[in-house]
Length: 130
Image (cartoon, rainbow, N blue to C red; front, side, top):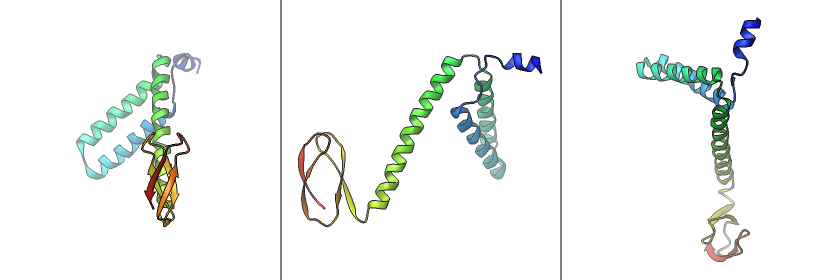
């Protein structure tokens, strides 16, 4: 047990990027077994190898930087997805316009005709038909 503890001392271990890559590996392995695709099988095995490489890596600075980039991208994706879902829920009652000056999204009630819109971010005024 002590030898195993010494072996893993200083290794990076599993992080959020490793978990995401492992989930993708499992999905690719299942899809490749269903389709019988050798290319997907090789790709999934290579991905598993990269997951193991990340777990056993001693270069914690680079692995942490990779995880930080992943988390930043995941956060942006999650926010865009959440905004898109919100817009789909609001599509019956509201219209969204982009400010021509700063591109800030502004929500306006539908069915009001021509509306004078003031951007909450930059204060620019513009007219749009709802």
